[in-house]
Image (cartoon, rainbow, N blue to C red; front, side, top):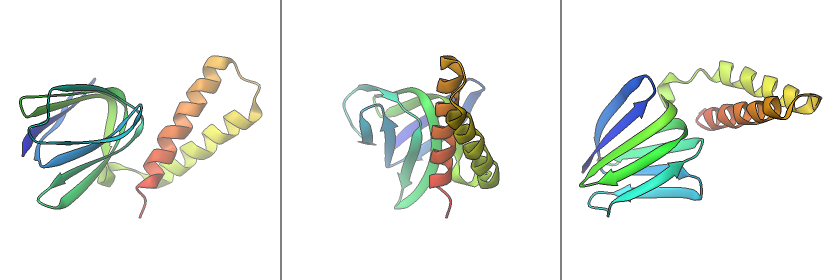
Length: 130
């Protein structure tokens, strides 16, 4: 097991003692186990899984940085939501709004990028819907 600290701009979200974590990095999914070598990885918008005694907990994370050293993992992300925190109806509405903005295609480049990121976040949240 190792210690896993989840941090957002609002402060410490949670500290967990886990067996493994699977993260959405900018170059694909990566799983970290106890006693791994020191590591720093950029994190993408996606689903993160933690495993403790064969129990899996799912989270949606958005952009950040993951570090691991001496059996302490730290995840610094813009936002993190556990599966139980997600309002799936709200996520579906956000998806529809983002798709509408992208389809209108008459926005500034900055607004288009914001719409694309909003769409990616909402689709990621909706992946956890049962």
